[in-house]
Image (cartoon, rainbow, N blue to C red; front, side, top):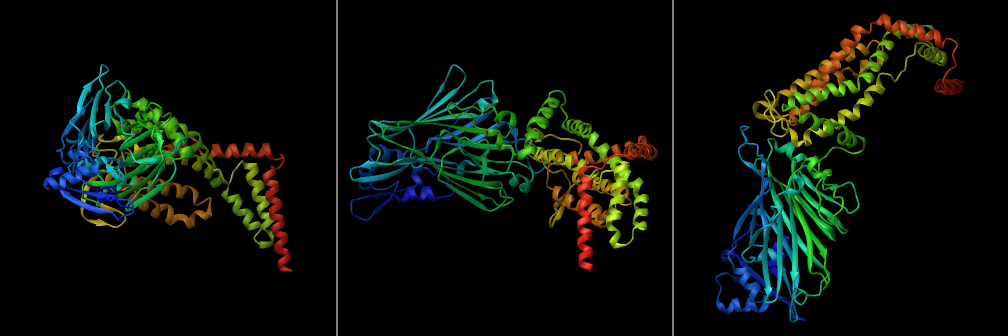
Length: 621
């Protein structure tokens, strides 16, 4: 089947700047029944005869629109400025007024630009019927008529652009930029498409295509960290979760043959989202990672289709251009779309980790922000609150480790009393009885630590994705959402980087101090800890230093405080809860349990030991 070559080029191009018609070439292919395609390339300066041929293929209205000069203009509200081009009737730039871009020296003067205007594409693709020919049209190849901008009584601004297809048929784009009291509303741009009188012009087709792409700027300090959280996200209808192409370098793509509710070109702290309340029928999604130092992060491409019938005369869409702020995204509401779950763009973690962040950390964080301006103090208070919540767990962990330490001489005596392998059952039974009477749990030191892990992991997800920390300074860090470099190295160290993050270094040192203290307390009572000395004292702190050197300084600061408070809490507990007091507790428990029944767990454990001993005797025979 014959094709219009320019249409194919525009669809297949991963990146294409808007080019004025006077310097662009227009390619047209006529489709004749039973004949091969014939392609005619026409420059803007072509002869009248050639232009007449173009008019015969696409009609005089589209031919004139193909040659017309584009215009650019900007409308704005309190939170953003949206830049339009009549070439394709598309949005070519969005400036967020309340956010600034990170500069190499740390200053913040330039407002955040979501994407590069030269790479911004948005085109609707369909076929027109011209006699026996089906002519493909991509609105990106045409200049819409001079736009009109109207202000509504509620403060909204409406931009209308029209692409005449014939004397009585046109594609009309209508953008509405709101200016209300809600931030969630003001970051929305309603996008309505009217197919005015197009039924007679449209060829026999079941879908209309949408071709959307752009390249996002690097807006944060570290390319590596920003790129880690930059991806292409999308949501299936009736799902409360979202999908992603994945994070990291390289090129990734996904072809989806089912309905999709919205597609987001997601950066670390900002997103451009195309919302289809009635869903798109299919989507071919991809991104390509830019080179570090280029000033860009990723080039996104979304090629989608929406259903079309001869009765279709309009489409209602919307764009969200704004921050990945949980409190804003959860309130975004588009008429007819239902629950969008845009707040899932903020990566708070799955399962219990996301639950802790959504229902515990974020409400507390937002509450503290209402009264405290310094985010370093807010993080300090957050650490204190977390330590207070888990203090009973920490206390139990300390008491359990102290009991193991105090009972260690008696365990050693049992080992001397039953030195032979065939006495293993007696030794284990005696040890378990000793533990039972003293009230010692062999898992007492592990379970409290495991119960703390969901909180620590939840906060690990919260800090790098919290836009509230962006641009906030504390001590020597001028941006708690990025790494704090106190020394830029003239070379790059593998797995570490080309700078020294002081908060990451202090966090690693505090981890070493905490690990050293914990090892000293547990090594004497738990001989197996000796084999973990290298991992605990040296390997783990070094790995954390390399891992967190590019991470959010706010996160490193939080873990530093957490380690220091844990050490202080342990020292205070040991001072006020002496070994004599713990020994008295153990003695009282032993007196209470001297005639007590064995637990079901202990009985099952002893039965297992008896079976193992019987098997060993059988093998020796």
